[in-house]
Length: 282
Length: 335
Image 1 (cartoon, rainbow over the protein chains, first blue to last red):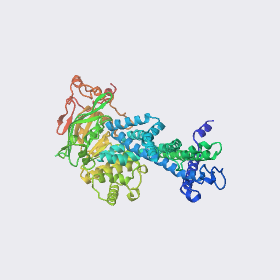
Image 2: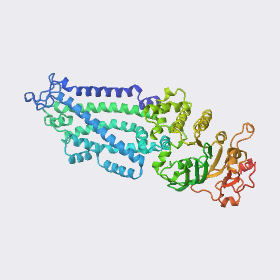
Image 3: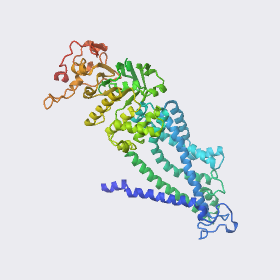
Image 4: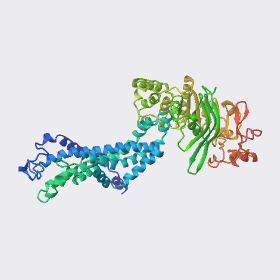
């Protein structure tokens, strides 16, 4: 009985690695396919072909065509490039900002801490999407506005994580040792504190990336992010909405692409997070 | 002239319960080339004394008095000027070597970092070469093969050697070793102490050795200060402190050291009864009086000054007249 319980609580090493490997495999395939999209598929993702509108999936058009006669498979693959890039950058920017500000707040404390952390409180007081939509309303819809909005909405959590870790590291013997050897604060913060707090932020970033990609497609669906005719999953779903009864493939297949990337990123992120966590405990 | 001259050092730490004097009115000097020991139990203010000297107190702490080092008062220096002295002129070796090394930085880089910080090396190759030299100097075998290792690949003793190498790297005039051997097992302790003393002689440095181990003091130091409850209670050269201690606390400490010739199998060790004082509410008068078998009414009300009771021998005890061999008898220990 107990052994059964234990087995449930702790999945085997193989099962853990399985998630990581399958997630990485799916991501690699999607990434390669999207990078090579213009070589793999003879259709342009943007150019209209009004003789071939609303074709159902076939060998010629794997995912069918949309109301402008564009090949949906081509558009889905080209969209993958954009969505993954946004997903990556909109995690990296808040990560860097959070690392810098959280590091300063935690390390120097006092007034810097108060100013930064009260700003963090203000930012986290707004629900994520409200914040994003609010910033886009000011910046204007489009790719740049979305980068700014997702960075502003995302950095505060990183800053919180980093600050908490820095508060612990700051008290450690090796920081005291570094100070006793006369190192300046800049050197200590950059070379000794930050490298030791990166791991938990990366663990969080892995799950954050899924959220960011979902937000990107949601925003584009609402017309606030990527603008047509640029291929983007959210944009494509929005465009296909009117045809859901006559041409199901226009909405469903880009939707499935979002789901697939989400699942792959979750599997991959969980695997990486687990490895990092075990590494930092050892 | 003394290398380091501490005068009336008082360190206060403010906590949520109030202000605490963790170091009170401590004065001593360290001569060039000397090994000076500071002993006392946990919480007696030994480490705080060291950290006050180097300006390494946390924000809640503040130190008053003076710490003269080469014509400068370390306690009044700006933090930038102090950073120039830390590592370059005075280096500190902290207690637990394994945690005194940054886990994510390679050994060689950590040894060389102080030299880089203080501008003593001009190239990476030079820094690496100096690290290698230091590693063999502190007795790390096969330095070439280990310089790119991380701290977790090193044993505790080896980590302590790395920490010593980093402290030595800028050839400081004074090294403050804060319980350098506490986290190590006995055989390694002995090696590290011998290494420290040998290096001190070779480099002509002064050494402040903080410890709670009387044996370590006897083995290495020329002069010793004993601290209790944040105060310096006795200070003398090592030989006379061990031969004729002039403070009941020192006598008690010496009683706690097992003697192979007389104690084995027969006598039990005699601990000092009671507990160290609560520094938030230190006892009036002599801080040691609640635990002292000689305490009388004067001890309870008068705070004894640190007086020279013999040449170069200072004690903070009022009852010099009755201090005798056997004050820590079995009866007094039970009382």
